[in-house]
Image (tube, rainbow, N blue to C red; front, side, top):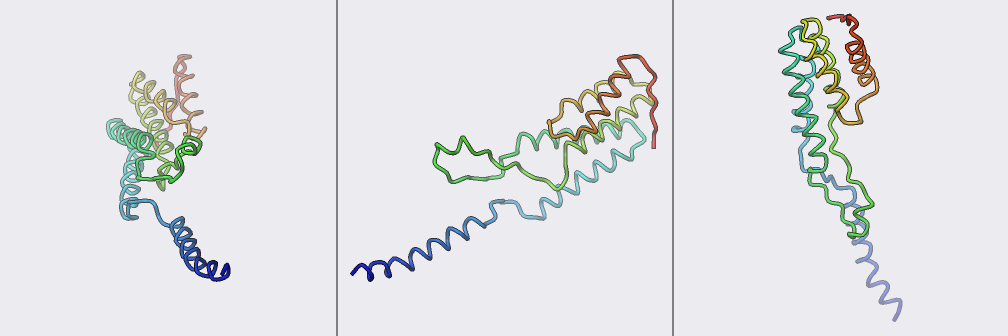
Length: 169
């Protein structure tokens, strides 16, 4: 009799296990790939235009747009519909996965800001340059150290009153 009961529940257990395994492999992202690609291309165009800008106004505009994208990324990290099916006791112990883009928005923003700051120095807008370099230091902690170093170097030179030499590409 015991053998009959086990063989009766075996298919149900196998089907349930397969459903769990397949469910764990399912894509939880509600966004299609095309939207991510469009978002990537938009950010890349802004970054490229900022990096090649020789006009402070154009670089400043690109910097502002990248700052807005970075702010959206930091505030919308977990707004992608991800739901972790855990008991409430464990939810506080697990961090949600961040929303990922194909580009590092913070690095692009920092690079664009430093370029805009260099253009501002070249045009004699010292206060704008100082604010721009300082904005790099207020970005997310995931900004690559290279950009933090560059911003601090420019700020230090501005504070000391040295003439900052800038190479405009």
